[in-house]
Length: 262
Picture 1: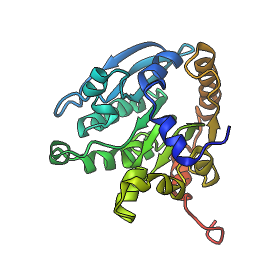
Picture 2: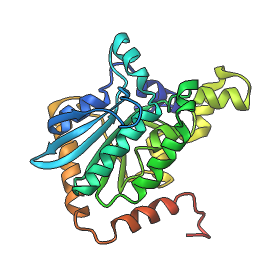
Picture 3: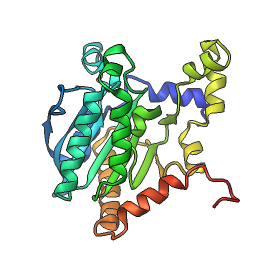
């Protein structure tokens, strides 16, 4: 079925889609959640901890929106605060120390932008993740499962492999935010979505991601089994790679280059 860009946005935002925690529990085994950034507190919008993937130790991190209204309130609708990004980075640095691969599941409209988040260094927290993920000496795999909003999503997506579900979106700004800025009218979100090139097909064409995963059987055991098998294949290919961080750096530096620069 053909979907317009804004249709994909609405599907990505659907409350019926599996959340980050659903993916952690469906793809990995023996998940042990760890809390806190060791600086300020714990942010429930980001869930992370230790797990195994077919017997292989991994660190799993997800942005969690929640399913019910109560859960969404507790998780801040998946809009992480600085302590959430610092918690994720703490877990990733621990994974690098012990050479555990990192699995990230991204679903956020964007980082929290309230006064408290800004006072506690939201921009710095995101920037630290971008820098330190680029240097992490262990494989990182990221899957965008719903919304991929701006730096809030990119802070968990500086990875060796990045995929999107077919109805996920990835953009520098929400369609409503874009429409409000360009046309002073959030009602033009549908037009903005088309211009933002935010669909999985757009991201693949721009070489921002490595592949698109079909959503057939979304949320079923067989669906998660398929993602787990993909992760295992990619980790086998990446483990022991002598130029891992150099290739990761080159991957992101190459994005946005014109043909004459390639």
